[in-house]
Image 1 (cartoon, rainbow, N blue to C red):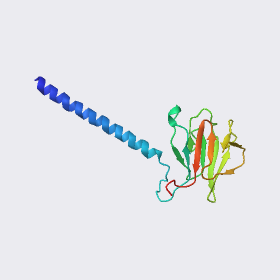
Image 2 (cartoon, one colour; image 1 turned 90 degrees about the horizontal axis):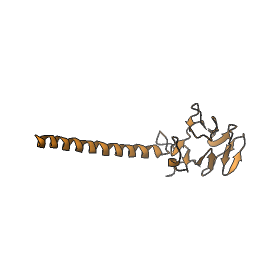
Image 3 (cartoon, one colour; image 1 turned 30 degrees about the vertical axis):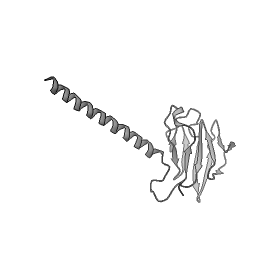
Image 4 (cartoon, rainbow, N blue to C red; image 1 turned 180 degrees about the vertical axis):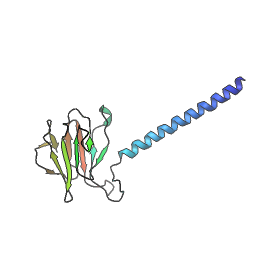
Length: 150
């Protein structure tokens, strides 16, 4: 009787270990997949913002990169296309948009300001170039205008 119960527990324990290993592999896969800064279409690469900071030091949700495939506003409010709960961001902090194949950034009157290459942006639009460093709130991004593998 004890041998039968021991065998059943052995198989249950083995099954639990396999489920645990599978869930860890799945989480790693989903994390790696979310870090890619490529377009959804796969052929045409869009510009994107790549986070420089380490995500672990923040207590709010943050991605490694944000694709700029259309007009994007960044801020704390959920009305923004990119909503980040950084307490140092304004509810509508900055707008990044593409006009005639040129990517532009515009501060939306934020309290703490928007900095491009360590210079504060006023309320007029400024052209973004590949490798520009953007600082908003506690976050630092690098603007990447094309696919890194090209």
